[in-house]
Structures are given as structure tokens and as C-alpha cells.
Image 1 (cartoon, rainbow, N blue to C red):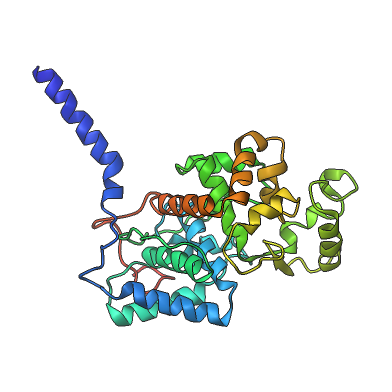
Image 2 (cartoon, helix red, strand yellow):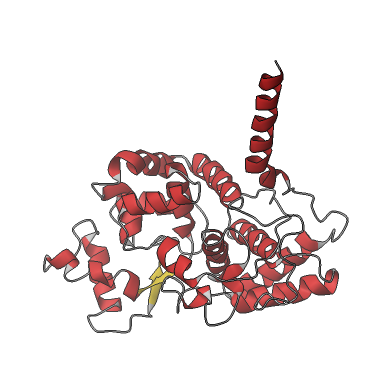
Length: 325
């Protein structure tokens, strides 16, 4: 009997060690220490989107790229020689850092040294979705900021538009996310833009075939060939969600059914041989059921925001999101 009690106690300790970190995040974390933080962040995100609607997608992407490297710890915001900003998936691509600085300044003016940069990213991502027409959710808060960036981790761990669907699924699995999360979070591409360099390989000599990618709509190919000619400027951008650029909806999935996904990783969710069994049915469901997509997206965002957060007395609350205190 005594051995059984000891065994149960050990199981309880193990359970708490695995799941306790999530319990330390809460929707009312700043209710006493900074009760107006949500209003302050919403105000600044609203102003940023008034200036440039695309910024909503950029802020959403920052939270995504932060959580996939070192967990949701604000490490993507750090400057320096090992900055994640210099990693291939982020270089000349991740943006919105000045907006985060502005939000942080406004939050510091409201309640000095209280709200982490990691939490600001999580709140700003939610507000970017809401202000673009998507569903809202209660953001779990209480993250603290990490002390180190991880450029090599960003290079190896972040999903790439050139990855196969199976590789992308594996990278999601590595941080505790599943196939539903892959497809629903890919739906974040219903807003924002992408550079020619990320999809021009599909336009002229795809995989050495001497022809465009056969899974891309021919009219779309013709338009993009004009926008992104061979040896042209790879930094020219176009909408990720053709004909529905700035509205957060399920149109992205409707495009996939019509071979109008911009990136290989987009269209591959519906068309690639290695992704069809796992992802095609979800694309079809989301294309016909906006509510299902919105619900799954919200759940996946909450789940993603729980990737290895620093809590309690771990690390720090940065005064400046770009440098450690």
C-alpha cells in the first residue's frame, strides 16, 4: 500500500511538471498589475493597421515565428549577431519590429516594467486577426522574456514555403502541434503578402520540368510571370490570398481548391501527394465552413501560444524588446 501511494505521488509530480507551466498562464494575469494593457495594445495595433493594413499579417507572423523558436519568449525581437531576425526565414521578410517598439513604449507608459514583450506579441497577434475581420479569443498571459536568441534554431525549425507537407507536419509536431494546427494556422495566409523569391520557382522551371508548377492556375501563372520575371526583383510582393488580400476569412481555402495557392506550402495542403491524406479533407471542410475554420484557428493559436513559455520568476520583463536588461 505504501509503495502504491509513493507511485501515485510520483505520477502527480510528473503531471504537474509537464502541465504546470500552462496553468501559470491566465487570461487575467495583468488584471491588477496592468488592467488597461489590452486596451493599450489594441489601440496601437489599430493605429498601425490604419497606416498599413498589411501590418496585421506581419504582427501575426512575428508571434508565430517567435513561438516556434525557443518557445513564446520574445526571442525573435532581440537584436545582435545571433539575432533570429538574420535567419533565412526572417531576413528581409519578418517585419513589424518598429510597431512592436511603439506598442512596448505605450505599455511601459501605462505600467512600467510589468508586461513582457512575449505577451505583447501574443496580444498583438490576436488584435491583428480581430481588426482584419477574424474571430476574437481570450489570450493567455504571463509569459516572461528570454535572454538569448537562437538563429540556428530559426533556420532549422521554422516551416519553409519550400518544405514538403510532411516536413512541415514534422516541424509542427516537434513543438507539440498536430495536422489540424498545420492547416488551420496556414489559414493565417488569408491576410498578408509574399515576396517573389518565395514562389518564383513555381513560375518557369518548376522542379526542372521546364514548365510552371502544374498545380497553379494558368491565369495566375501568367499574372505572376509578369510581376516576377526571371532575374527580376525578388522582393516584389503580391497577396497571399488572391482576390481577398486584407480580410481574415476562409477565402484562402477556396483558392486552394481552385489551384490558386501562392506558395508551394499553401497549395500542397490540397494538391501534394504527401499531404493529401492528412490535409486535403481539412482544406475542403474549411473552404465550405467558415465557422469551423475560425474555431479551429482560434484553438490552434491558443495552443501555439502555450509552446514552452517562460513563467514565474524565470528570465525577465524586458524594458526594451530589442535588448536584454
